[in-house]
Amino acid sequence: MPSVGGLQAGQFAAYSRADFGQVSLPYQRRDFYKLSLLTRGTSQLHQATRGWAIAGPAVVLSHPLVPHAWETLSDEQSGLFCLFTPEFLHGGATADQALSPLLALGRDPVYVLEPGQLPAFESLFSQLLTELGTDYPHQATVVRHYLHLLLHQLQRLRAPAPNFVHPTAADRLAALFLELLARQFPVARPDQPLQLRAPQDFAPLLGVHVNYLNRAVRAVTGKTTTAHLAEWRLAEARRLLQHTPWSLTDIAEALGFAYPTHFHNFFKHHTGLTPQQVRQPQALVV
Image (cartoon, rainbow, N blue to C red; front, side, top):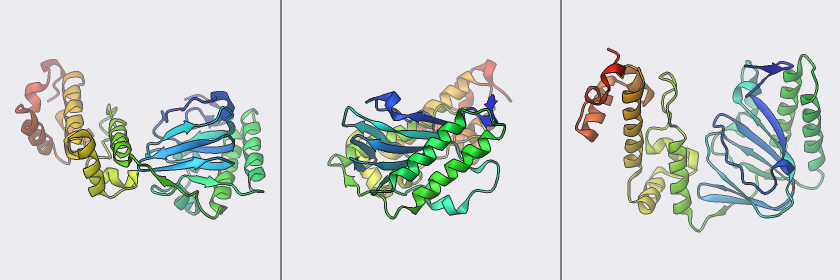
């Protein structure tokens, strides 16, 4: 992977919001945190059943596993944001435990800045961007240092911004559940199995109780969360059986089954066929 000044491509990037105008950007990379400094403009951040109205300077820290939508409400949008992986943040060292609460799942993402708090964030972001334009051999170390300072500065803030409950919470929750489910596919490698395999795995990421999630998904889609999960796993199982040379053990592991027999029974229960019957002969690995 190419690097500049020791900064690995694909681990860190920084941008100006002005470059994107009013475009609502999808969160394409699933392994990135996103730290945004909003200096001007009005917008709303939507996440599961909650939303945040932002009308002034604010800082937003988005978790890679929590789906969200960004809605811009004014023509003028200014600020900066950076994307970073956990690996870049820690730099191969032990995670900074002081930052664990800030980076954890379930915490509110939006912090409204009080008068006098904005200059510190602008200064740190400016120094970070300046460093990205250098060819200093230890650039990655310096950028990481500024990133740590930004996160610690954020953690100093007293309380996150108040949020509101969406009037169409069930519709939004069901849509975000399906988005989070779809993000797991296609499975790329046998040693990177599905992490979200049951409704109770999704509920904490969406900030709701599992029973509420189940009711919302069924009310909106007419199917249970379990049915949606089964459909996706079955479709992926067929793809892997027919178009990859993976062994049945590898496929079972990739789809989150503890044992190949569990995968065999699941597949036959839902399709009436065994995995071996579906697999193309030329792809079969004994």
